[in-house]
Amino acid sequence: MAFDLSNYETVEDRLARFWVDHPTGRIETAMMAYDGDSCVFRAEVYFDASQVSPTATGYAEEVKGSSPVNRTSFVENCETSAIGRALANCDYATHGKRPSREEMAKVQRAGAGNLAPGSEPSPVASDLITTVGGSKAATPKQVGYMKALAKKLSLDEEGLFNYVQQVLASDAAVPEALTIAEANRVIDALKKDTQ
Image (cartoon, rainbow, N blue to C red):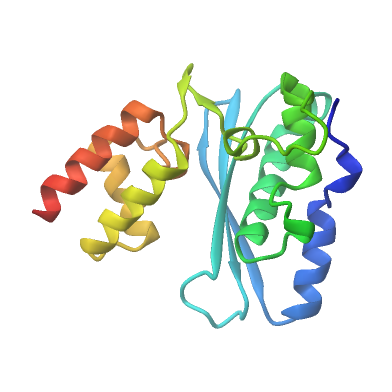
C-alpha cells in the first residue's frame, strides 16, 4: 500500500508557521554544488535576524529531469526542499513526520511508495539524498560521528564543511551528502587529528 501524501505538510505550511512564530527571523540558502544536471542546496534557519549562528540547517539534492517539476525547475525545487529540511530540523514538522510532502513525493517517484500499512519510509528514503555517484549514501550514524569528532576539534558547521572539502579534495563535497566510503575517509582523518 502506498503512503498517503496528504499526511505530509508542504514546505509552504512550515514557512507560514515559522514566520508567525519568528517574524524577525531569517532563512538563508546557498547553492553548494551545481554541475548543470544536479545541484545541492544548504538552507539556514535563524529564529532572529541578529543571530550569528543558525538555529538549524538542512541540505537537499535534486537531479534535472528526475520528475516533471525537475525538467524545468530542479534548482528551485532543490532550494525549497533544503528549506523544508532545515525547518524540520528546528521542530517545524507536524505529527512527527520530518519529511515534507515535496520530499515524500520524490520518494514516491523513486519507487519507494509501496510500504506496509501504517509504516513509515526508512530513514534513508526520507533523508532525500540516497545515492551519490552511484554509491550508497553515508548513514546518519556516520554523519553524527563526523560532527561529534569535529566538535572535539572545535569545528563549527562551516569548519566541518571546509574540512570535508579539504580531505576529499572536492569543492562539491557536503558532509550530509557523502558516500559511505567518503564518510569513512573523513572520519579516519578526524580521528587522526583528534589524537
